[in-house]
Length: 135
Image (tube, rainbow, N blue to C red; front, side):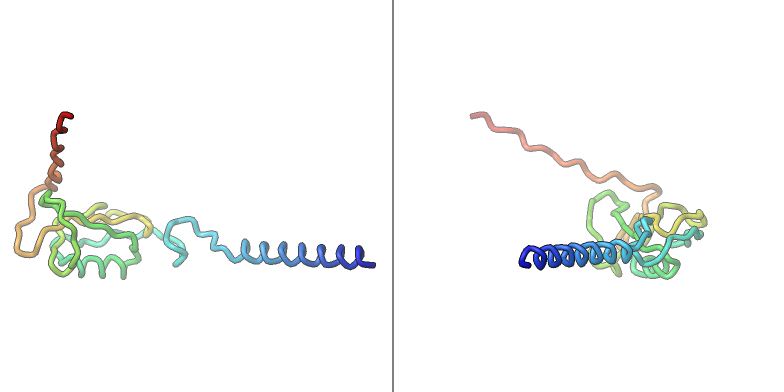
């Protein structure tokens, strides 16, 4: 009798585990577009964001459905854009008007508000290596 009870419990536990696994797998979002499960990516024209403040540009891009946003220092000083309101957009990739999937990463080239945009992005400075000391 104990063996039969044990077999029934084992089968019941196995069934519960299999049902839980099936529920988890079917609940997964099949969206593999990288949009974070917020919906499926669609193709839209990229808005023109050059000349806007960085924060405003990000807001416009997000309202247009683009969620993957990044920025860099166009002056080539490798500065981080910590306070978005202190920066303006000089360039963008992909270019304005380009039709792109909403899961495409938009990259903004920026400078501080009181600076002039360079004609082209400047390369960040190369890091100097310290000479090794002998012995």
